[in-house]
Length: 460
Image (cartoon, rainbow, N blue to C red; front, side):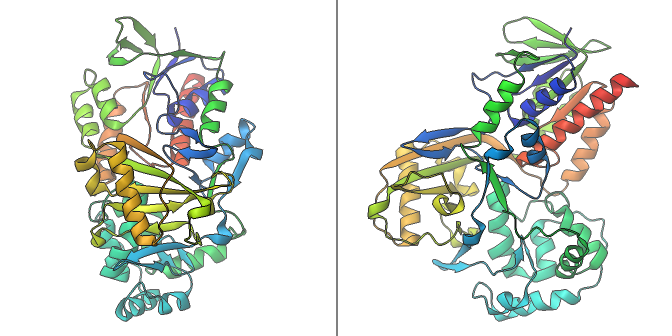
């Protein structure tokens, strides 16, 4: 009998399978799709590397790089070209650069904030005065919008927090939980009061300086390179089944997995490396209350459009990483990445590669539109804002149904309720991006922790 079954072959499932293999724990990986990787997929389009899902991961979270070093890919990692890292925010149809010195939402330099045209004078002075804010302790789980407004005002939420969070979660700052999406800033608020004073104090205490490194990291040949290498590394030591798990039964001890072809698999541990709502369907027979709680975690769908333009006819400078579009602008796109500038070795030498992201409130009503319509929508809005006349020679549209979990206000209590129920089902483990972090490093970190607990339980 396999000791562990991993359900789901995305980055969470693959990293769990790898760490199980490394620990010499017999396991089986079950993925219903023919390919592994989940939302991570790289296509080569006319000599250009086009990511269907995430194009990179955050460098400051170490867990992805730790895995990459272990599997021998460290020399294949490239960083974003941060010497050209400038992001613009659209306000009244014009590009306004984000002020220099921003660490996500928090300014670390005063002069760029005082001179920016992104905010009114009242908001700029509010940023400066925030430095003197006293420590604030609250057990209330506020929305990101409420949290940011308390520190910097309404404009800071509208033109900074909302577009930045939309790019990460595809959700609204009015609904997302500050405790769950900005835990570091909430802790700084409790300790220092002022976020700016807290960031500066923490930076001065660090023995290392991160300014010389890249903000984003990716694989030279695309994020698919990480998936393919992990798949090779687990060959021979991890079984693989290409089928669908339709249910899980408790065998006391262990579990029986019911497959779509009618054949069962019996294991000691189950790792569900799938979305929370899919995990809910799997565990419904084990614990109806757990299933109901998992179903309560909302998810958004996403649509992106990759547009390739002939460089010789493209007449707009790509002097930055791209732009963000606040919801208040009332447009169909939430953001656009200028891929040529963000990463080297992505676009073919004769191509300009722009990647548009459909706004969350537009995705569902545009889901049934054709690829041609969606590519035309993205091109029209991007070219209108940037003011160029070139037409795309190639376009690729990617859709991911219910792929982005929303850590809304109350998410922490939901996690507590989930953990409480899971404790009554020893051997069941929930991996994936629906719980404690949506990025690639977060998913790897959660899966590694689960495997460590499994190994530790076997030794005790």
